[in-house]
Amino acid sequence: MSEKVIKAALLGLGTVGNGVYKVLKSQKEEMEKKIGAVVRVEKILVRNIKKAAAKVEDPSVLTNDWKAVLEDPSIEIIIEVMGGFEPARTYILEALRAGKHVVTANKDLVASNGGELLDCAAEHQCDFLFEAAVAGGIPIIRPLKQCLAGNHIQEVIGIVNGTTNFILTKMTQEGMEFSEALALATELGYAEADPTADIRGYDAGRKMAIMASIAFNSRVTFDDVTTEGITHISAKDIRYAKELGCLIKLLGLARNTETGIEVRVQPMLISESHPLASVNDSFNAVFVRGDAVGDTMFYGRGAGEMPTASAIVGDVFDIVRNIRFGCTGRISCTCYKELPVKKADDMDSRFFLRLQVDDRPGVLASIASVLGNNDVSIAQMIQKNKDGDLAEIVVVTSKVREGNFNDAMMIIEGMSVVHKVSALIRVYGD
Image (cartoon, rainbow, N blue to C red; front, side):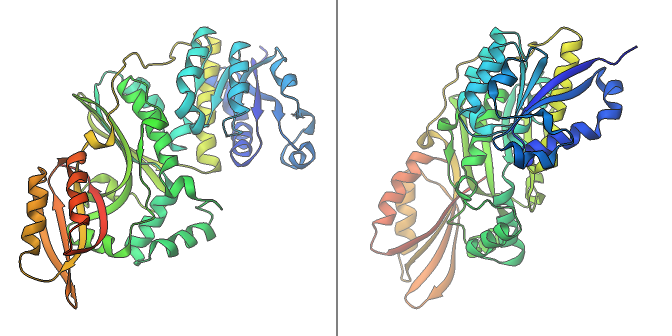
């Protein structure tokens, strides 16, 4: 009996595209037994054919003509690893309309236009899969859509950016300041030449938009996510957090509350006893709480050539199985609700606040009075170092509506006894 061949096209042959090519090659001998068919890369779309030729066994598969890929009826699966918004969006939509199934790792596109792409896939009974768009090699999209479908998901919290986690790990373990740790991350290849999307929280924000949409069955886009980066975190903040039994991590947090969905990416103090506190260096982890399953955690490499390729090829194999049994398009968009997404001021948080103030009687009482007048309850207030006529105080609040806390801070920042707001960081938990 001759083997069944499913032909695919690869859009892009950069780091991730090259990884996909390698994984498919390494799986060739076992593929038929695993999925009942062999996946053959029929065409690879690249900008520079001459440059790409050194990366493949047969340069004849290379093309710079999208139409040659789109109009080839033998190609059933498109693997998009180009990145960016356009022309990736156009190519994916055209492929779906032509009846081709699509796998992508494009978090920017899925976070902003996921609804459009999933609707197009459903209309044409095609598969559109994007496991690699969120946490690289860590499986989380399929678990949320399928394995945990019997739950009402209450919360998804994760460390979903390896660059920032590496930086904060070095600041925690070696006492580095942010600029030193960023320089090391760049030198070792953990940070891009322009690290803005990572250190400002945008990369993690896109991933949280995707996960929140799936977890809560209601569309969340990147514009809905409150994002804050780690550029203002200092070694002193990390030392003080340790004294409180906490570490500082850049956390993505999505909650389904009675008044709407909360989705945010912010540096937060998290208890040393929480499983996410032990996730270090460039590793990622996603912690999911459901009403039936309780707490679960998914951990591993969140980026990189081979981990990301692993997730992409897993999606390709899933599509091949669906093709073989005639059940493509069976799981499309799961956003059947229209839940409100809360604005930042309406979210509830605990806060770690570090201030430089006049070292004289009555100062602590006056600050406590401003907080109390704005319904901000103090869980801890500690006086730290003295520097001449100034004292440093640390305040940890109970959970409070962020709008109330912001109102209090506007008054505190204008007080003559307050010389500097040195740090303002959220605290995870109740």
